Image (cartoon, rainbow, N blue to C red):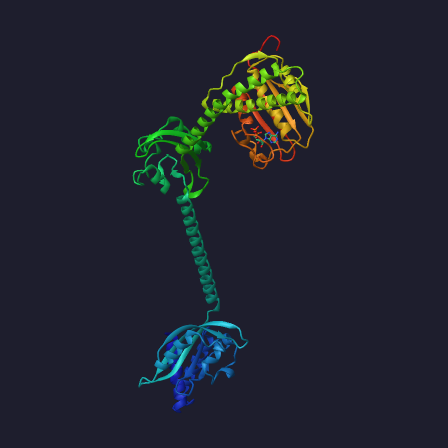
Length: 530
Ligand code: ADP
């Protein structure tokens, strides 16, 4: 308002000057004019006046502040249209707003990019006010201007930051959504039933597979305690204990079998694995349970085992007869029989024996499967047994030297025939899987109250990922299958035999660097000699 009053007075004065009505002899007017001019020059806002009655609306007045803001001197300003301040930057929408206001003789406020004489940009906050005569015709415009570059820059920086952040948030949200969709599609595709529990073991969510497998709805599942589901199929004290222990101990539940007559789906065998979800934040302390229906798989395995058992029994009977006949033939053979026939009989006997061992092993497997393997413990001289086994193997083996060292005990209470089988198997494997080496070392020792036997070869070795699996039945390391004969059951039987005696069997090996198979057996009863 202050400016408007001043401007009105200046214009009246300028008008008076223009109309020749004003004379400097009028002292009061002269003083007023001086005062007003001084006031305007003291202002920190730039002030210009344009004459709308002249062609192109030229500037007819500017104060000192405007000279400072624009960098132009008064001489370079007066007579110009204001547009010189925008230099080449003519496309600004604010210019249209100004033009519109000039046309209509209205007041307007804009923030516009202007350029100083030296070419540098400054943001001009321009308030333009129209001065009208008594007929309403716009005669002059007064422009009050402030350099708001700093504020504008701060605003622009802020806006820029805001835009950037919004973009980042948008980007992040999109990628989170994508991740979520990606994970959800995996979870829904998995062919296992998945359940997420909260720390109180209440069901938070289940996947589609769960709903389909157990023929339930989400409503009757989610929000319920795991033990309340169905007809209490998961309400097993041992399972409860294991699940409750997951969060405090971080121990997962592995391969827990549940056989149950489930509602809607009948008798099934389910395999359960449960882990803590390793996430912080809102998903902290949740438990993921994966449930697999292994009913069919177990049934197929059972049938395979049955077949194996029947087949090996069926093979065993005729083979025993053949073995007997070969022995009779060897006995009844006349002394003058040809060497060729003798050799044929000798070889037949060897192959029959080999077949016999294989069938015996298969029978062992099915006995282990059905838990029918019997242990006949009797005291025997352990060291002697190993020495004799080595001798026996060495006699039939020219390619390798079997070096035996150390002592364990001469009195061990166990199933000798079973332990012989283990030693035999480990040494035979050591020979078989080291075709390019010539030495196999067997070492006997006593470690505390245990017997220890180590069989070391310098052969092909086994990479660590197979160290556990080779003790499974029928498991053979992939790449050797073609090169070496075998059924992958020797180590499985050995492991069971050693376990039956309360001991452990393990391997230490690296691919290409040979293997050492060792087992320990606890000395059961201490005898007088021991
Ligand atoms: P098989 O020898 O009939 O395959 P085993 O149960 O005795 O069956 O052995 C299982 C697998 O373990 C073998 O197929 C072989 O891959 C690996 N293995 C056993 N002993 C050795 C060894 N001394 N060196 C390298 N690999 C071995």
